[in-house]
Amino acid sequence: MLSRSMTRRLALQGSLGLLAGPGLAQARLPQFRTARYQFIELDPVEPMAPLALQGLDGKPAIARPVPGKVNLIYLWATWCPVCRITLPRFERQLVDFRARDVEIVSISTDERELPQVRDYLKRLGVKRLPVFYDRGGKTIAASGARQPLSTAEGLPVIYVTDRRGGVRGYRLGEADWASPAALALLDHVGKL
Image (cartoon, rainbow, N blue to C red):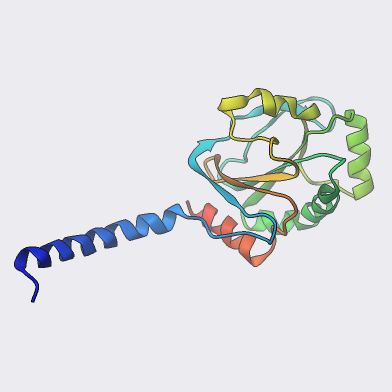
């Protein structure tokens, strides 16, 4: 038979577990992984700072998450074999993503000149996808501690921001962002 103090202690521990349970469930994002890569959740969540880059027209442009939407911030380069697959895929999926309140912000971090990047996108049939140009990724690299974005681990890398622009995490390498696991992740982030 349990003592009175032991019964109270167990009841209190159970109550604390029930109170903490919902908070813990919200803190973890659904898993999105392959044999090679997985989505890495960032903690703490930090906002993506606006980046002063160039548009494909060569004019100054600000790359930032679209407010009120979940955003995929896609960092890529023309030399990247996976990017040759992902860019046209995102072009085809753009309407479906927007129907889910998901925007794609793609940023070329190429060493190549802007006209070469434009020609590359034209060859791939990419016309509607929002594309910014950050020659050599210098602006992203220079933003340092003010910016949770980085290409240090490799390309491509895709960051996911919540509706307030907070960077929730990232994923390296090739991934099907229209897969059930990816959509579950994006839907979950959309509710945060």
